[in-house]
Length: 418
Ligand code: UD1
Image (cartoon, rainbow, N blue to C red; front, side):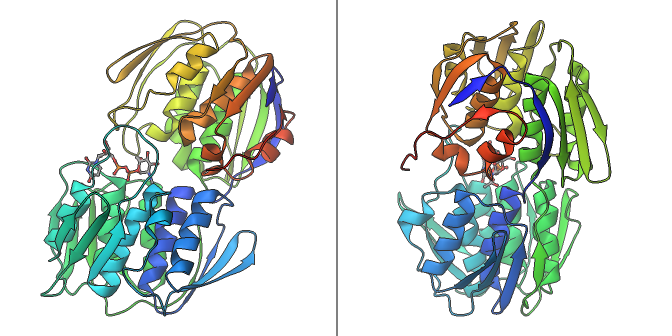
């Protein structure tokens, strides 16, 4: 429950990145040794990923709130719980990790946010190029490589974060050289490559559209710290743009935030970059912008709903185009309940800004959509209640606590079951 209409002021420290933590946790399956992973965010998706590995026989030891040691030496391949796997999208990384470790995989079909059809054909194309035969029925994906894995050249038809990381996981120990072309360039791709290289892998080119992987015989344990979460940081940047006030957002890599900072500046928000922080402030009115989401370094699709909430408060009509997923505007119906003026036509939303929204009872339809409702609630005087907050807690570390420290009147009134 949010009593909105208060500015945000103060400092927020950003946690480790969800979408880097998850492939790295599953990447530990490739290592018959102890890996210590630091700067893990305290979020439900990480908990589920750790439980999947634990359930398969890994020794998972919590060293402190953000540090976990994982030893997957005794893990039995193909033994993951279908009920746990279907809770998160990122469990598709088990496929790449099992293929990389055992030369075969047996994993339930992954879950995750519903943005329309989310195929994994490019992941499968990559595994097949490495020598796997892959079968998919409604419940399970099965892969096997009777002749063993072999490095290959793979040209993805589309830029896919998941497929790029999955092929890295499957090929890091495959004999020969694998080259991925038209690879995704997100910072979490670089983070996974850095983790695997710290374990003895030989991956170069991560962060560009061509990644080269020289297969190594085995990986060894390491200590590795996850990069900061650019989507969490971007969410608080937009929150203060919506409420007014001034936030220092710390433990970030400002370079990763450039597409977000640029768009906020275009709207009239002030963004100052430090070495590992950004300061964001807004005093006057904000103006409309046009924006299209794209793979990195473009504006991230995972910031699209939060930006829509901000556009509802801007002067003029903004055009917001989704360039990555088929259907990521379901949440706009919730903003309509708050009096927003949004018309969706295919992959573009036309958002007419208003001076103020009105408070309402709304729901989180997915993780980032939930964050958008929090932003709308914070910016709107009166009581906004948000249902299904378990979806927000999948990906935001202590969102309520961090916002309260900066002056937000937000409380969790009920624990809801998944
Ligand atoms: C990951 C992130 C998600 C983010 C997205 C884009 C995780 C767990 N999830 O999702 O938060 O929004 O990247 O930055 O890290 N596609 C295909 N075939 C495939 C794979 C993808 O057609 O085999 C399509 C998708 O449907 C989508 C586009 O390609 O339209 C991009 O998807 P992708 O980059 O793979 O996103 P995810 O890995 O699912």
